[in-house]
Length: 311
Image (cartoon, rainbow, N blue to C red; front, side, top):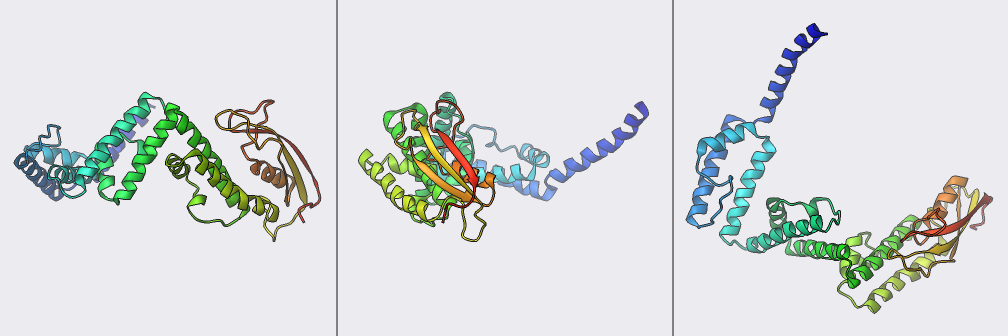
């Protein structure tokens, strides 16, 4: 065992050295990196930018040595981040707005963490530089959309009445759109976007009556589609089993009773399991096997038998 370890150690050291060399940038790349970093620092001094973090100094050797030990992606990022920071300092068109965007995004992430909201993903990163770089590369409308989405989601987390109303609206809309897609209804337009965030932010700009009307505008054609094409069924597959499902008690996402309690649906499929799963997928909320539904679910009765009752 000890002899095996002694034999493996030189091999591992060689492999690690090769890996390190492969990850490091070349002398030529790092020469240019260090030169550009010092020049960017001098430019920042000319414009009185006032940055004090380690990215900004005129020690060429320190920049070069860091570059030689860092992954290529880090080196490219540092170069881009310095250029972006200089754009902000020089107040180039669009840069000031993106500075405000990135600063707000970082503050929103602190609120997300402080409120234990649990939001994750690139939208909720804590890197000012990454938010700034993203903003500088997209139209103003895209940045404004992200600002509105973060504001709305933090509002839902905070539990304000308007935010709760629109959270329920957006979840219902998301379910309607998903059902329409499962049924192959082929609806289109902003009303049928699958994105929860877009439904949420739209609702927050509208009175409650307008949002309620929009939900009805989706439900009308969706109800018609239900009678023409049961969930997941195509015209070419076998229709061997019929599932009849009826909701018992449904609860809205906020826990209040839903008006969808007591609704029925008939769905068919080529197999018993397929018909059963399609019936559950057609419920207004996800199915619950508990005696009392949790928020955003329905208790149900399901009967599946052989034969095709879908016409």
